[in-house]
Length: 340
Image: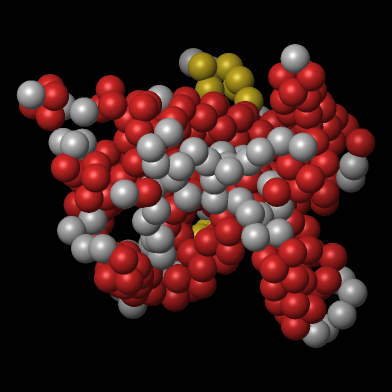
């Protein structure tokens, strides 16, 4: 009962703090918090394939940046794009790109999977960098944030920083709910089982390739939603958003926050962006100090920042191991033929 109470009180306290934040701080910090939330959403999306699927992808920045370009290309020059049209188009384009890249990349394993996803990410980077599709290396401006209209009535004004913050917070909460539902469902157990022992999963008849592909597509769509709102926030999109540097940074957020937790990467994103913000204003050699602090955290907390919760509250954060809950939960994903 004590443990259940702790599990409920801590998230509610964090949610209350998140809701109260824009009412207590200046606009600059509200915008910074919105950036943290969207990057955290991207990190959580990546963690679905990295932490729960065991697949290290270096192309998720491509989905993030691609979404920004779709918003820019679907936005009229003299007025705002409709969110009811531009957001579904963005999700569809990112989902299709993730399906194609995932279907080809998942035919490889290990270091080769990393190399193939990196190659696809760089291909999309140079597609926008070396052609005039999206303004070339100069990028594109988005002069108006998307309209959220019902008829002629404006439901949400994204031009207001605090309103935009609450929209970003809503997207993050929906992402947390979706990912928790997925990882606790038979689908998530099958994904984790394939991560822990692929040969055993295949021998039992689990559709490993399809499970991983679906996870990759869901992850790509979520990364696209984060990229859509990030481009809307800053009003600009450039090829650098698709580059491997951003993918590597987001991977650091995942590792730093904790790969076996849904919300761990969100915390990792807040730590990385907050640390960068503080150090930039303190010294011109901030990158050196930044790197040393990250290395220290990794060595001090091998399980990520989420490991602090186990030290403070005495809760176990490790995922189940093969032969226990993972394999029991994954059995419902097993085809009937495997039971014969």
